[in-house]
Image 1 (cartoon, one colour):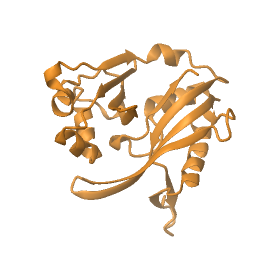
Image 2 (cartoon, rainbow, N blue to C red):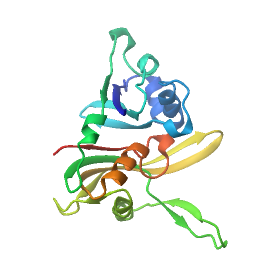
Image 3 (cartoon, helix red, strand yellow):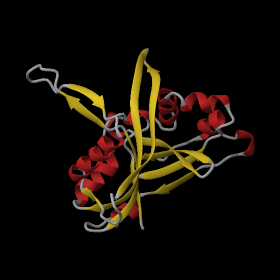
Length: 215
């Protein structure tokens, strides 16, 4: 079973803004919504804006308890609730050849060879919008879908940001891109695996979750 859950956060609270500036803090808050988990059962999450509201969106095999997130980042005095639905029935109806609307917040990267034989090279972020879109097109072929020809590109970048924060005492800088558009499923099994496991790097920092919906 896969759950898709969301909880609104209060941007007027200092604790919320501090967590938004540090994916390390937000990751810890998300992980605290679940019992101890194995490495292969980690939730995917991202921050999404819908109109003037901002949500933490979480995809997980275990249903989360967002009580502490409401207490830290929400409106606890109002007995705030959150939404959680079973994503499984929708995913079970995914069909090859069909077109779906999608949203993906990702960390597009490339490996640059460092001259050392046998080395995978240094991982670097893609910087330009065209590089980032090309990264998505390349990933699509490996992840069971293609970018639809429904419009001129099939996908667009709706937000680009560079996050700088501390993680375990080290300085981290990552480029984060939010893509939206239309995709066509070409390999159902690979596509569902991509939804379950996420796409790309920096999943602990709110990247990689691919969400789809009907047109």
